[in-house]
Length: 83
Image 1 (cartoon, rainbow, N blue to C red):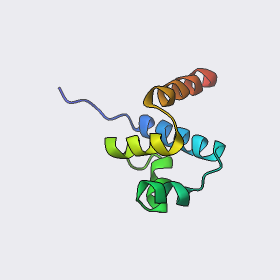
Image 2: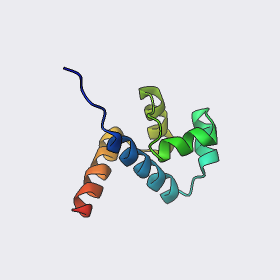
Image 3: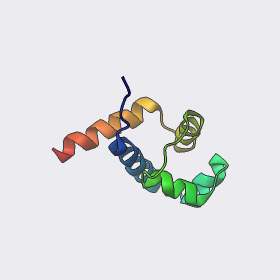
Image 4: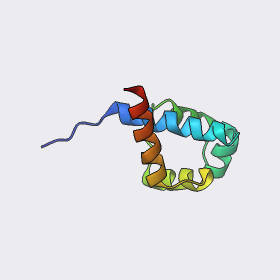
């Protein structure tokens, strides 16, 4: 059975990435430099237009100083506050 990709997951990840980046007053350019990628790629991630690889996700967590567990908790909290 083929599993469908949930496009909302990419959007949620991107929105959370943007929120965390802004909370820490980090620019897209700074995050891009730390990740070794382009500013436009960070923008695409934040808009949910592309999915990060596991390696990129790990690097994002390092740059933002968070864990996957914290990211998922933030996502769940955001979902609960919207309902």
